Image 1 (cartoon, rainbow, N blue to C red):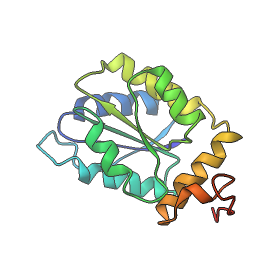
Image 2 (image 1 turned 90 degrees about the vertical axis):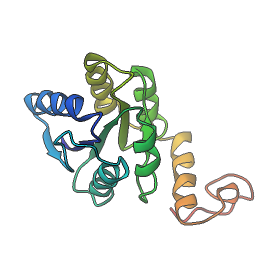
Image 3 (image 1 turned 120 degrees about the vertical axis):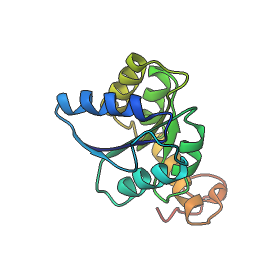
Image 4 (image 1 turned 180 degrees about the vertical axis):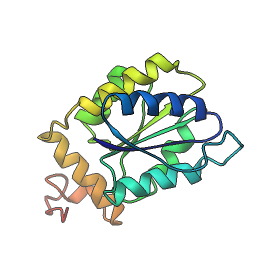
Length: 163
């Protein structure tokens, strides 16, 4: 699987360790951004990973910063990206199975390396369930286009969604 990874200065160590593990498990890992450890603003690496996902250069993105919150907010500004802030294996599973998340955002400060690796394993191996969840993801896509999701995709006024 092809993956894009990046971090701000607080997530560099965790990201480099994760990258090594993912490569040893056979994944094609694209490290983007400045991973020197020097202070950097999280919107920059978030954008680079989100753009790689949106442009279909990679299947999934992984972002690590101090809390994961800033990365998640920034990545979600890129159309077609569904970034999820994940804290454990259960939220990783739900992010994929219910929300079809394509970027996982993690906290370097609150999660240990072993848990980060477990979370990523679950995220990468959990399929999207589709069904009722597909309708909801289509509504997210409608919002990205500036449309009101209450009247499309089988909800509200029943107007068909253009997704």
